[in-house]
Length: 339
Image (cartoon, rainbow, N blue to C red; front, side, top):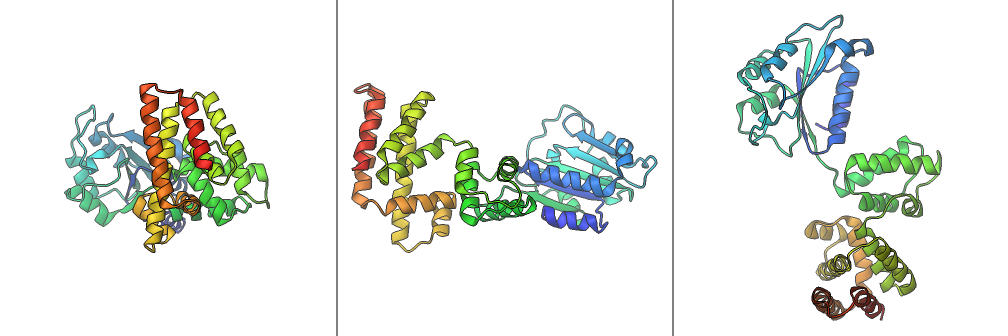
């Protein structure tokens, strides 16, 4: 079940006796809990009929006792069990003694006035366990998985629409590549960008460059892009800024070599007839990184790329053995790349 499907059912007053929310995308889990509470309880009921427990700190039998307690001055109660890792194959690290038979008995005959929510911060459940099979059979399961490349772009465009701003597919892909697919980070950046441009206006790649902080990897991508497009002065300014930020030259060199290995991989797969999406999947890269690498790959012959990698390997040795100043080594490599 998706968060959208869950919210649709809740709006229609279709409640399950229990929900399993599992996965590593905490934003989706928090949204799911918030929706369950919103549609299950009135505001005035929350103080009396909404309980949140941590499985690692509270005996599960005490939690089940609460789930079986009649709501106070309301029709329903919501009981949330966080860190319910007993539904996975992970070793139990809780600090208390648990009687899991109380959970097994409860889910066989759940209270009709309680909505019980199991929060499992893990990528998968242990499908072999009887309790998991029973929960999945009689309850609702939501997998809070990180967004993929395409779904992240669609999410960004939908978020823009909700905020009455516009962002095209290229800018959405660029933002996804810059921020990653972690939803909380995307929410924060989209809110900031939408507020900056204002309702009815467009979030562009230039706006993203202006407002979204760059990682070291982003700076290396841009540096190489500037070099191969003969903007050596811009590339050197980026490099000197990195030096002022005390970035380690060996790390910069390593990231530059990684980007050229990506360019070689993309070039080879394009030659075999692969499309950008196929290449992104094969090399486990973000689609925007593939798009950038494919553009850069057209500017080099394959032998030139291997020659540059060889030079970088030599430079790595020179840096680590102190044969030459590290900054000077990188400057010389960038000048060679620009040629």
